[in-house]
Length: 151
Image (cartoon, rainbow, N blue to C red; front, side):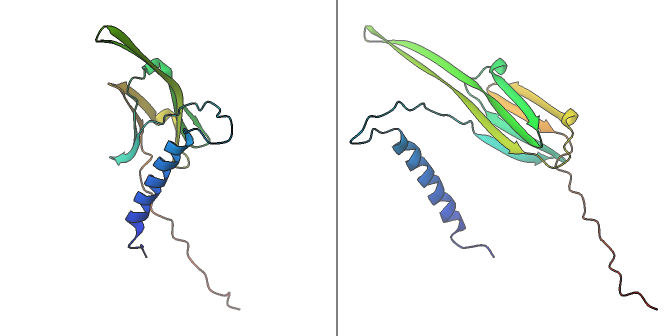
């Protein structure tokens, strides 16, 4: 039975995660603060379309050559690095911002996924990986139950 608080708990969990992420980067009292490397994880959608599993990853500012996709033991991993440099002039002075880091997201694929049936396309900062036939639902095989042997 589904809990009537299920949606609330999901929202609460997301708030907790965001709060923890914010607090992790703040200096603490009474000790030295080690520099914290900022992490970034791309937003990923996993959906089914015509019997295929489709994975979409939003990778704004990431170049195609900086993305790597691997499959090992049923685990599809999208990883890479992002780097962005921005410079603008404001009222007679320049503002330069640099951001760089790496990312890694992994998705479990159905057992027996054929790696030759995986295709990837990168366009306008969106990576789309299609796993052909991975969402086809097989009906369970019914096993006949026998009774005791008659003598």
